[in-house]
Image 1 (spheres, rainbow, N blue to C red):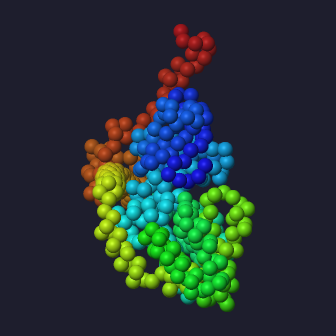
Image 2: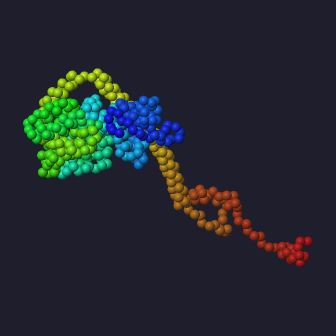
Image 3: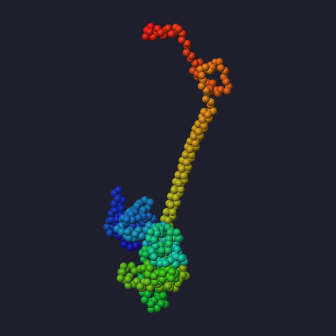
Length: 457
């Protein structure tokens, strides 16, 4: 399986029934669609077709090599046999699904990436290449030992890759460092379906190394002629890359990356042999390295600045493809629709937050009213308790009265010094005390008679 215009292979797809299970399917990614079949026969009736532009890609289970495709209505889950296979499928699909958002450069050709990015204000080379080089092209970073040779943080590189792939533009000054951004740049060049110099020109460029050995002038003339045959976007990308690498090698005393080391690192991505013949690649390694060294060393001669701008204008005027313009307009409209939906969703979220805020304010006011009522009730209780305590401390305790000094209320005039509480007495308190009657002789005679008879007669 390779990342190209058509990508095919076996995957396990999750069924749509109530009982979820994964079944083996032959998957074909072609154009902007993903189709899956029961057998590896593209001519048969497809079991299903998925429209990829606008689809979101997520890793369902990294341990089980599962990933999913999601839009506003559907979710499709797939399972792979290995992590590398899952990453290749994600790259092949994401370069199509994230195209409406200005992403999808990993796995897409340089020419296609530049066309998509022009809709979003891009330039003549891929944004990721321009931003990475712009970040690294500073004095203190060019002095970094092992630039492009030492690997960056793997997790950071992966996160930055996903940001660019999904159409976001991360701030490299905040999230990057010299080796991480250098690794990201190399990863992007390796992900291209074809090298910066198309593989169809591989043999012609390799032959230049022999010509250059016999005659430097003749070798440069032939190399300039071949470079002029490159597509304009590939030409601009190669010129920008070689110009920057030439500047890097001027700091070789500090960063230990001379012309030879840089050619070893970048030659496999600048010019590839897609034949798959490893023996041929090994035999051509020194020739390929020599060609890349020549392009970096003589970049000013091989890539004249003014000529690039003139050719760019000519290509823009002569190659007007109405079908391509229609496709670009469609992509722009998809981006506008997505943006409009996001604005509507944001407005709904803001309105929901406002409603929740009003409800919270009403609840707070109700609680405050309850607190005020309780505070008033507590104050009234405290005031009543204080009044009761005051009356208890002021009221005098009346002295005990003896029977001999008792005066009835009828014969005693009220004393103004005595409090009203003391003057108000119950009828029982106003009665005179009961005094015992003295015994007479009759009483004594009766008692004696009673005692003799043992009771009343």
